[in-house]
Image (cartoon, rainbow, N blue to C red; front, side, top):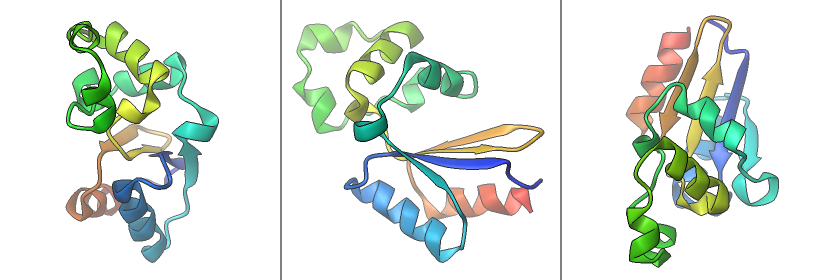
Length: 126
């Protein structure tokens, strides 16, 4: 299956995003890069991801942005709707990077970066 589009979502100075971009570059995989800080995050974008993975995959509860929320704000994130609102309001709370590969047959989403996951996903496309 030849990818129709490959988009990497994240923040350029994030270490995991840097590793993912480097791996993709080394493997000569051309991508579109969506910078959360410059291009933002919309409810439609988050909802498109949530069609394929549960909202909890995307929420980074270990990061600084999450820890800076008040306890009340953290406890309010209980479902896809409240998580979407939180991710749109504070894109840095999204676990990074988010790799979205769209083919004619399917959409594959990988959250976070691991060489093994990337190798597996791209091997299945060949």
